Length: 443
Length: 170
Image 1 (cartoon, one colour):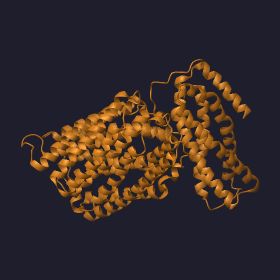
Image 2 (image 1 turned 30 degrees about the vertical axis):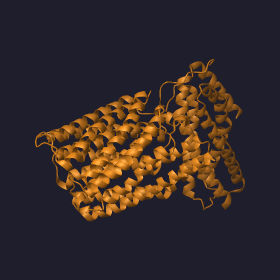
Image 3 (image 1 turned 180 degrees about the vertical axis):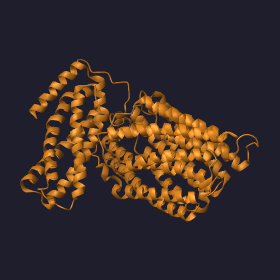
Image 4 (image 1 turned 180 degrees about the horizontal axis):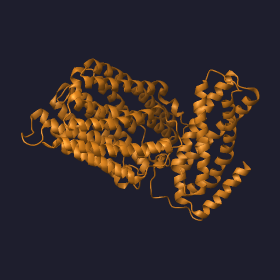
C-alpha cells in the first residue's frame, strides 16, 4: 500500500469497541440514566406491595398499580433506552453528538418529570400527573431530537437504525395517547363516540411495550448480542423480515384494540404475526450465540434467554386477552409478563454486562488500567441476588395475578424488591468506580 | 466466522485457540477453588498448563509482534490512532502478565504449587483470561472487519508470508 488508505465509510458492530474513545460521553451522562433506572426498579417492585389486592384485577385508574407500572415503563425501561441510546448508538454508528447539552437537558427534564408523574399516579393527583406528563414529554422530545440526528447521520448498522426509526414513531403515537389519557382522567375529555379510555389505554400499552420498547430492544440486540458472543451480525434481510412481521403484528393489535366487533380475529392475527416475527428475531439471536466464539456468557445471558421466552409468552397472552379471554385476569397478566417479564428481564441481563463494559471503556479513555470486568460491582453477590429475586418475584406475582391471590403478589413484590435493591447496589458501585477513575484521571 | 482475507482467518484461528483456552481457565480454576492447592498429577490440570504455556508463548512473541509490526502501522496511517493506542495499551498490559503466567507454569511443573503460588496463579490466570477475552473481542469485532475493508489481495498474500515468518521465528 503506497498511500494511507481512506477511512471506511461503513459502520459495523465492532465500532462499538473500536475507535470509541473519541465518541464516549462523559461517564455521568449515561450513568445518570442507568442509576435512575435502578432506583425506579426498586420503586416499581415496592409499589406492587402497597395494594397487592388491587394488582391482580388492575384494569386502569390511578393508584399504586398504575404508579408501579409507570415507574417501570418510564422509570426503568424508557430511562435505560435513553441512556443506552445516547452512549451506545453514537459509539456504534460512529456518529458523534453535536453537543452534550441536549442530552443533559433531556435528563434534567425526564428524570424529575418521571418522579412527579409516578407520584401523581400513586396519589391520584391530576395536577401532578399533568405536570409530570408535560415535563416527561418535553424530555422525550429533546432526547428524540438528539436520537433523530444520530440515526439520520448513521452510515451503517442499518437494521438497528431502522428499528430505531420505527421505535420513535411508536413513541410519538404513545405519547400523544398518553396526553389524552391524562387529560381524560382529570377532565373527561373523550367524546362518547369513538375509542373509550380503556381502548386507548390498551393501544398505549401495545405501542409502549411492543412498539417503542420492544423495537429498541430488538434493534440494540443486533449490536450487543453478537458483540458479547463474538459472532457475526445476523443477516440484515432476516432482521428486516422480523421487523416487518412484528410491525404488522403491532398494527393488527392496535386495530383489534380500537375496533368494535372484530377484536378476536384481529387479536389472533396480531399474535400470529408477532409470534412469527419475534420467533425469527429470537432464532437470529440464538444463531448468533451458537456461532459465537465465546460460549460462557454468564448469568446475564441466562436472564436474556429467559426474557426471550417471556416475549413469546407475552405475545400469546396478549393475543388471548385481545380476543376476549378474561379468565386468570388475562389482560393484567399479559401486561405484567410483557413489562416485568420480557422487557425488565432483558434490560437487567444486558445492563449486567453493559455497565462494566462501559466502565472499562471509560478507564481506557482516561489512560488508566481498567479493573477486571468481573470485579466490578460485587457481581458475585449483587447480580446473583438480583437474578434470584427478579425471577422468583416474577413467578409469584404472575401466579398471584392469575389466581387472584394478593398474598402471592405481596410475596413476589417483596422478593422483586430485594432483587432490585441488589441491582441498585451493583449500579451504585459501578457509578462510584466511574467517579473514582475520573477523579484519578483529573489528578 | 469466515473472513475474506487469509490473514484475517489466520489471526482468527489464533483467537479461537486463545479464547477456548481462556474459557478452560475460567472453568477449571473456580472449580478447583482459590484456597485448595491442586495436585499437579491431575491430568486435566497438567494438560491445561501445558496448553497454556504453548499458547501464551505464541500469543505474545508471534501474534502480538506480527500485529504491531505489520498491521497497526497501517491503521495508524489512516489516522485511527485511538484504536491503535487502545490495542497497543492492552498488549502492554497482557504481555507481562503472560510472561509471569508462563514463569508460574514452569515453576509449578517442576516443583508443584504451594498454597501461596497457587493463589497467585489463580488470580493471575483469571485476570489474564478476562483481559485476553476482552482484547480478542475488540480485535474480532472491530480490528479484523476493518482490515477486510482496507487490505487488497496482493497485500493479503504479503501479510500471510510475514505471518508465517513470525510463526517460524517465534
